[in-house]
Amino acid sequence: MPRGTFELDVLIIVSSDPRYDTRSSKFQKSLSAAGYKARVVGISSDGEAGRTGEVVRVPITAKTGKRFFSQFYQRVIPEALKTAARVVMAGDIFALPPAIINKRRHSGRASRVRLIYDSKELYEELPSLKRKRSSFIFWNFVEKRSIRFVDSALTVNQSIADILGPKWHLPFTVVMNVPEKSNAEIPPKSLDKIVLAFSGGLQPGRGLHNLVKLMTLLPERYELRFVGDGMLREELSGLSKAFGVDKRVHFNGRVRNEEVVSELSKAHLGIYLMENAGLCHYLALPNKFFQFISARLPVIVPKFPEMERIVDKYKIGAAVDPENLQETARKVLEFTGDAQLYKKLTTNCEKAAEELNWGVEKEKFLAAVRGLI
Image (tube, rainbow, N blue to C red; front, side, top):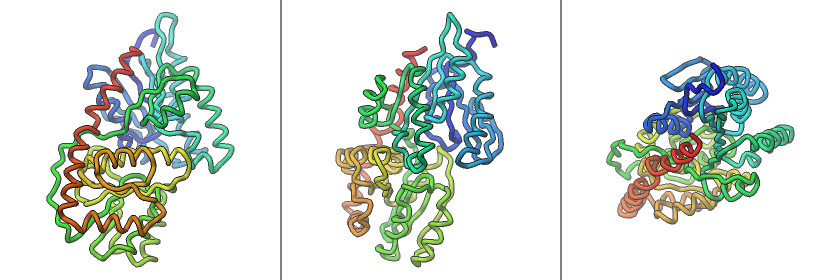
């Protein structure tokens, strides 16, 4: 394809599987609905190549480590280079190298490709990178060298924007990672049997062991449902047996983006006890938190500033010390032991969901893209 000839308006590159990456999926759908030609290139977590409309998945068999990144770059870079787009977006730090290669390959004298960097997290604070010094140094170097190619940047909350903006001398637009406004019918619920729900990958740092331990402090009518999958599944299953709560701990497995809120709506409370493993966790405002709200689930989350601010503003639950399981158990019992209080919390969730949804946030995203096209 000759330089200066663009097949797409926006090419989004991610190091995740777009079927389960709600953020890149929302970006692509919103751009298409607004009349732009947009495509996502990501990985296929089951190792099978696939394409659905403008979503392309390259096969990756490795799950983590050097083999994963070796396969990712060997397969994603050629796929990304096939297509010239007016704007190329790196959906995470790991997608920066192929996005930059695409930009440099397809920029011509008369038409320069623009690059958006979506820094969804404080990557230098990611526990998975900090645990291995060589990885930490390498990815910090990649981010530092890549910033000069970035024309526009996004992140998920103001706390992170306030850190990254001065660091990189670049304004960051806040686009919260909220779900689409849900039309899922919320089933009527009895408080005779209570289901607590966790949504997301079963990975270290998310307080999952404490969720299993929490069940030992709650009566028999309380159950825990993991909506998601990951490397800790077998370990958590074994722990639930060791604690004698395995009959009350259930693993639903991975759920597609469009089905998560509907699945969560079958529960009574959303619970997320993320560990304070550095600023990346402390300042988190994850998609799963908003999915609970969209499913009309009162929430119990860590006493971390961004999540606590929203809980307090909308009166939708409690922010607790994630290591204090006695306090957490008391809140669970308080919210589900009083039908009037539970009804009030769910009503507040419904009101919050009217504001905290993608219909509101997408306008900020689309404005950032329009500024570059």
